[in-house]
Amino acid sequence: MNSKILKNVEYTKANGDFLNTRERIIKETALKVVVDDQHLATAMITASMEHEYVLGYLYIQGIISSMEDIVSMEIKNNSALIKLKHNRIQRKISENIESDLMVRKEDVFHCVRAILKSPVFSETEAVHSAGLFLNGNEAISITEDLGRHNALDKVIGACLLKHIDFRKTLAASTGRQPAEMILKCRNAGIPIIATKGVPTSMAVELAEKIGITVAGLVRGDTMVVYSHPERIR
Amino acid sequence: METAKTFKVEKLIHGTFISSESRLVIERELPIYVNGEHLATASLVPSMEKEFVVGYLFGQGFINKVAEIQSIDITDNGAIIHVPDSSLLSSRKTKTSYRIVSGGGRTAYFHSATLCHISSDLTITRKDIFRTMNVLFKNASLYLETEGVHAAALFDEDMTLLCIAEDIGRHNTLDKIIGYALLNNIDCTKTFIVSTGRMASEMVMKICRARIPLVATKTAVTDKGLEIGKKHGLTIIGFVRDAGSTMHTDMEVRVFEKAQMKIYTGKERVV
Image (tube, rainbow over all chains, first blue to last red; front, side, top):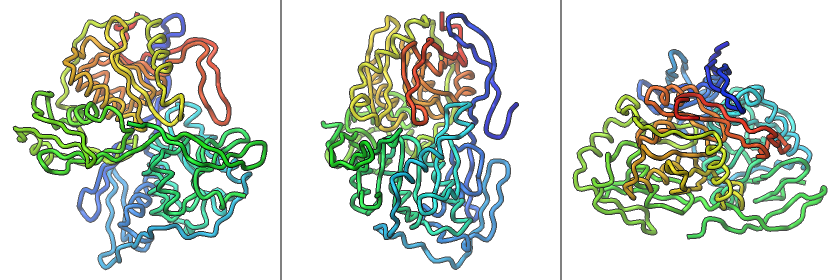
C-alpha cells in the first residue's frame, strides 16, 4: 500500500534471472516553508512530523526563540504556512555550549541502539534516524527522514513542543557528521552527539572549540570520543 | 592536498577509555565567486575542486557548457570564476528558489522541466555492474581509511575507469565526476556512473542533465528520483550488492551471500 512516506513501485530484481516484482520505496516530499507570506525555503523531506520539522528548522535558524513566537501554523498541500509574533525578539545563539550534562557510556550505546530500530529503515534502507534523549537516557523523540539533517530538525522541534531544556539532552544520529550537524547542536544548545558513523575534521574542530562532545563509531561495545570526553564516564 | 587528518581521541576498548589517534576526512569550505559575486559556499573534501566547481555550476544550471567559462582559479580564498556572458547566470539567480536537499545544505534547485531525454545505445551486463562497483570500492582509498565519505566513479562503455571522486557529500561526488567529464570533453552518453549514495531527486537531475544514461548505486532510490529518471530515459539500478560484499547495519556487519541488484527503470540497457 502507498502511504504518506512510502510508495509502491514496480522494479526488476536481478538475482540471477530477471524477475518483475514490486516493493515500497521512500517518498520525497517538497515542503514549502512560508513565513508571514514570504517563501523562506523548500525542504525535501520525508512527510512525517512536518510541524516538528518546521519548528526545529525555524529554531535552529534563530528565527524563533520558543513556541510563544508562533501565532499559527498550518500544513496543507505540502506547504507550511506560519504566522509569527510581530514583536518577537531575535534569538541570541550562544557561541559556546554551557551544560553540566554527564552520561554513562552505557547510555551512549543505549541511545544509538534505540534509534536504529526504525521499521521504515528495515523496509527501505533509505532513511536516516535521529533521537533526543533527556539526561542521555529518556527518549523524548525518535524519528527518521531521508536526510539526517532533517531528522535532527524534527526531533529538535518535538523537544520544543515539550519544552525540553536542550542543555540536558543527548542527540543520537545515524551516519556521518559534517560541521553542519554540529552547528545544529550548537544552535539548539545540545551538548552531546553520538553516531554509529564518523564526524569530519571540521566537525571535530568546531565541536572542540564550542564545547560539544562528539562520540562516533558507536558499534557493538566500542566507540571513539573525538571531543570533550569529560561528559562521558 | 591532504584529504585526511589525524586527531587525538579517546577510544573505548573492552570497557575502558584509552587515549589514541584517529584519521578523519577533511571537510573544508569553498566559497564560489562568479564575476566577483559570491554565489555559494560549498562544504567539501579538498580534492578535484576545479572539477567540482564546473560540475556544480553545470548541475545547478548556471552554465550550459564549459566553454562559457573563461577562467577558474582555485585560491586560498575560494574558487574565482569568470564567465564573460553572465546573462544565463543572472536570469538563473533571480529565478532560483532555494531548497534544503536531503544530503544537507541549501542549494539552488534545477527544475526538471528543462531536462532533455537521454538518448544512448549503451548496454551493460549485470556482471560488469558488479565488477565496476567492486572497482569503486577497491579504489575508494579515503573511504577505506576514514569510513566517512561517499564515492562515485565514471566508466566508459568498455568498462574503463575514467574518474573516481570521494567526498563527504554524495552530491559533491557527482559534481566532481561530471565536472571531470565536461572538462575533458567526454561524450557522457557513452558513460555510466557507479555510486555509494541514495538517488534522491537532485542526484538524478544532475545525472540526467549531464545525459549520462545509467547509474548504479549500492543503496536506494526515492520516488521522485525514480520518477525523474524514468521520464528522462535514465537507467537506475539500486541495491547493487555482489556476493561476499559487506555492509554495516545496526550494530552488526551484514554479509551478502548472493549477488543482487534491483533495476528500477530503463531495464533495456541491462543484459
